[in-house]
Amino acid sequence: MAAHFDRRLRKAAVTTTVAAVAVAALSASQAPDVTADANGRQTTADNVPASEAPAEESATGNSPYYTDLPPLNSPSPAPTIGTPASRTPSEAGIPATVLDAYKKAESALRQSKPGCNLPWQLLAAIGKVESGQARGGRVDAQGNTLGRIIGPQLDGNGFALIKDTDNGVHDGNSAYDNAVGPMQFIPSTWAWAGRDGNADGKEDPNNIYDAALSAGHYLCRFDWDLSTQADLNRAILSYNNSQDYLHTVLSWLEHYRKGTHEIPDGTGTLPVGRSDDDTDVSRPDPSPGGTGATTGPPAPGTTPPSPSPDPEKPDKPTPPDDPKDPGPGSPSPEPPPTDPETPPETETPTDTVHHLENAGATGLTAIAGDTFDKKISARAETKAGKAVGKVRIRFTVLGDTDATFTGGDKFAAATTNASGVAVAPALVAGEKTGAFTVRATVVGRTVAGLDYKATVTERVADVLARTDDTALTCTPGGEFADQVEVKATHKGAAADKVAVTATLVKSVLDPSENDKGPYFKDADGKAVRTLTGLKTDAKGLLKLPKLYADNTAGTFVLRLTTAGGAALNVQLKVAEAEPEPSPSPSGDASPDASPSPSTEPSTQPSTEPDA
Image 1 (tube, one colour):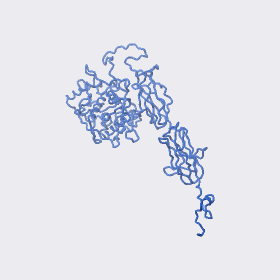
Image 2 (cartoon, rainbow, N blue to C red):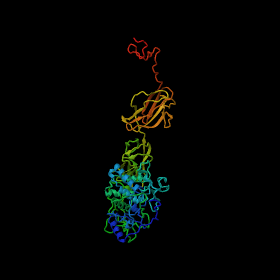
Image 3 (cartoon, rainbow, N blue to C red):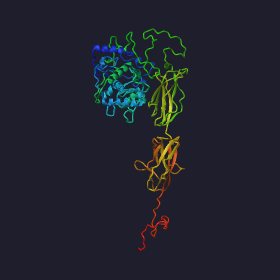
Image 4 (spheres, helix red, strand yellow):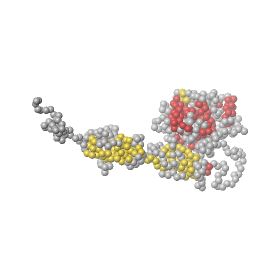
């Protein structure tokens, strides 16, 4: 939440005890087990399950969020674990620009990832919980927030500990990270999840169009189908790993699915309760006898449901406690002696990973726009070097590059097989050339990441040829009537987007730039004899700008070159035009230019008198 969304905000009035008890009872029957500390904050067991991702693996870093719930008169409201006190303020609709951003993001994801089935109402629910719909819609016409929305610094003091990852570029904090923008991304997540949602050429977490599209891609980054409850739960928990958060978002999702309306920007209601506020009346009371007893252990005889464990699904919520666990307060039995290489029964495969090894991906090079021939793979191993299967490995593209994995994401995850190897999706080179890094990390365990170096090279052509053989001639001081057009090919196929350099050189043997003869013109009409930045089109074709000549006559050379070794020399001739035929003294054309008198009569008037 923004720093100025502070605890001075007025709290909502508490509604009737009868309604509170009713909602609490409903929540107790539906909510997964959660715990709270003495101040009512979610404990580490709730926010950061040992077997799941740490805070920096979530979109928000598990930052605080708004706990207000939809009004009670919402038709068939979704079950929640909050008390009805947070349902007092009425929902006044969604600001126009914010609503437009959510719907545009849904439309984009329907095209790029149709199997995800992302509803815009989910983005609206998360936007409500994260920033109160960009602080009630305080955005300009382009979707930029009027002032940055910045959450508390994640310094470990009541929050997760995430040290600075962006040099304060987004959050203004060079010591620790803060969640930023209307969808509250932490900078380290934004680095790979950020998208340009309003086509202005930049990715800005404080723009609602960018933030909404990025949130959509984040929620759809795995093979989740959000039309199924289990995958929907996983996606929401991956955004902020808290059961309270899950139920709050689901409550707003159901509310928006029942219907909402558009309101003017800047007129939305501001939420009241926050998850990090000790005195927040909208949060359950952890004390004995409090109405929010659902934050404690479930009542005897009840078994709260939790998302179904699925080892093939990435980043899923933590399954219920192992039934073998005697629970807090019970005497701990002495563990039986075990083989040093045999993990205890309660230890997961992830817990045994000591390091990652490169499983054979080397020499990662691709031409711009092409798919890398090799896939990146990592092997998870114990300290003794044994393979570890069933471990989630996260692959992230880092650096100044537009390379992505198949599907357009800079992020992917895969599970290790029985040999301990996880293989990332195919890597696709963008148009930016140069080196970048792909980093492999273990999901849910802090071990050193494994970096893979990759390089994108220029598009190449091995042949350049003119599309016609018309002679290129010009008179001194004139301009060439025909423009040079060439076609680039690579291994016989048209080579598109290939960079071509055109230089008027001194000779075939001397490739240095000429200082006389033909020339091109720049935007100011000045003579230039070298052009760069030229590129072939989708068919491999390139038509050069018009050529001009100075007063120097002679034969000149235009040299065209590309990455990959293709080259072409084009001859240009500058010469005086042939003189026009002139009449002879007798009135006939000169012998060289006129036809024979025996074959064609003279065109001159006759001087003979009429007969």
